[in-house]
Length: 287
Image (cartoon, rainbow, N blue to C red; front, side, top):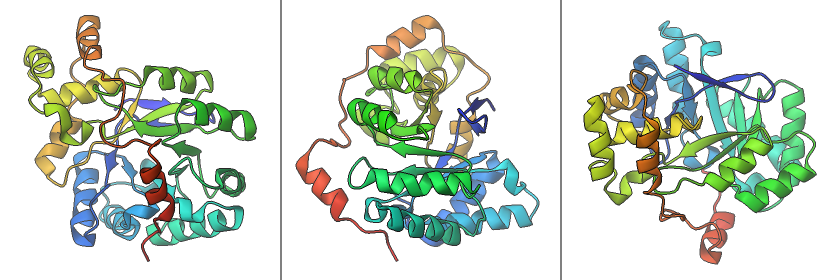
């Protein structure tokens, strides 16, 4: 599988496995173990998901059984806004490490662009210098906020994880990330099943040429833009389909056809909606 190089020369797989909305510990543990067995080497979780312990347990089991070495995995987690202060982030980082059962995290992200992101970032910079974190970045930072942040912090974010799929291409944001040498990472690369993505006629027509599904075409479209993808499934056969992307290449014509699907806005979450902002800031990390 292709890897992308971060600004600090750390390499990150272009495809990972996400565990958003998989709160049941046993289901999550099995899904992550199955993903590692299938060949995924990047695992993405977050403090707010409430499943870091399950992810850590799956990693420990996979290492113990000899499926993978710890250094072959790229583990991503995220701090939540309730920990966004210098002291709060320091405690949050320790909590992430403890729940994952790891002595270092490959990539830690600020999960949302609200609250004391600068105080939290200072703590993350220190943890990065101390080698507890191999890389640091942000998530859900739009064009303006990402630019402001990069202008004001010492260690620039190496990754920005945002919503990216054929119906929300975010070309302007990708251009800004490129300017700051940050790697884009896509949450919801299958649009959380919206827009008929699994049967969409444009994606199906393209997929039929290569013997691939519409979902595989949508995922491939992002990887050809050098976007890291995080498809999620608790079904092993779907995991296998989602990682089976590396024996075909979309043509320039295919890419242009997919480009016409872009709506120019999200229909999953609006980070400028005051009710969304209030909900996020009021949410707490599960015990």
